[in-house]
Image (cartoon, rainbow, N blue to C red; front, side, top):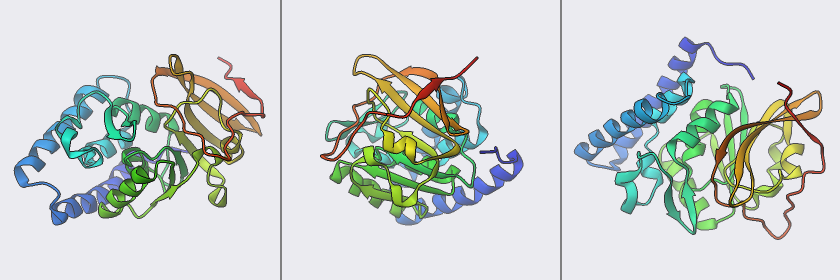
Length: 259
């Protein structure tokens, strides 16, 4: 996966952002004063929460400066959508804090030609960001009301390259494999083998691994058929929900990255 030329990437994303902005205005999700307030809050989120930390990928920063995060949370908490914290979205699930969304997106080094699998759609916010960065996004949510809600918001905002499935993410989406990037937005003690099996050569998988009390965000890269793992950050995610036919044990060997 190669980074796009920065100038080309900005032009590429700007076209998508313009269409997204016009759709939001046309659909009338919020009145003009609220819209202006959310735009300001979104800008502050990027400049104060992301740029001041270690988020340096211009495409990720641009995407998060345009995606209307407040439309991906319940109206009761929409005024808090751009704060530096996770928020409840119902059914004991949460939307990750903006920094974690940016960190995972940046770590994935998504190019405009990448095909992405996301496990744990939630409200659809991370998928929307990935949809602006990559070619196609396939995202799976096991909680049906969340998945249906995410599908509607993504459709209303014009994300035609984001495909939502209701089902067990542990099994991946084999019909569309292999994937260049796989993001898992829920924690498990080990990486599901099916996801590793669906990772493309030179692709990367990013996932929180550990227990409810101790988790690390890890990036696994497939090189010459081997899986190389590195730890990115300590994190806290909700557990990955297992379906009736799922399995979470990775029987392939994962090697630590050599420094």
